[in-house]
Length: 258
Image 1: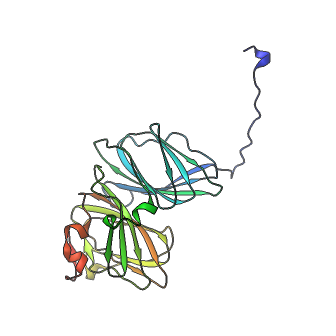
Image 2: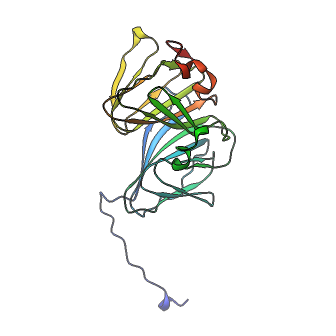
Image 3: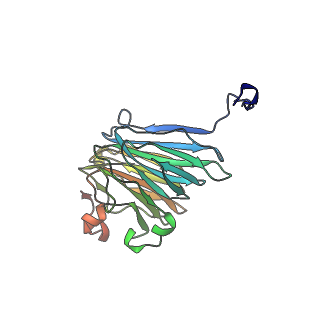
């Protein structure tokens, strides 16, 4: 092409408060008393796209909370709608692009790993109707979005939905799993404590509030006058407490250590 034939493109003005894609780090092992697990959020403007994203030593799970996103994972395309999840393998580049007219919001949980596993996409509209992926407890349902059947280093994740005026029972803690709860709908409360005498972390939780849960802390949740939703993301040994301990399902004990 001759210089005289070269296309001249217009400039793009970027005001100080303009944005297309944002990441907010919410917690990591340097700030949260967790050893492996980090949590953050992505915001995507309508029809905007990120650059290449990459976590050299971490695997990750994306949770689509608002808007619709197309995620390219090393050339493989996945479309995410409300509550869909996507496991991104350790050390694998990916890009996020909005395909909707509204702002997008995704949560991301990351954990240090050492082995690369394949991507795994779970659609909420499928999982919410699949009884093999649902655990029914008194006043609440647990949805296993990324379960032990999907290979990973340390991560497991899902959603729990509480009916109004429900509490977790029995309170439980973990010797081999650290955790984060991210509240996505409704208002509730959470307690995190090593024992009753030392109980000091007692907080009301609104939409997009979160709590990190280090090892050996009990962490009961309480719903209020409306349905309560939260993400739980576990990092450590790969099991869900109710599948390993029947006492959690039938509430036959007053507390449980896993």
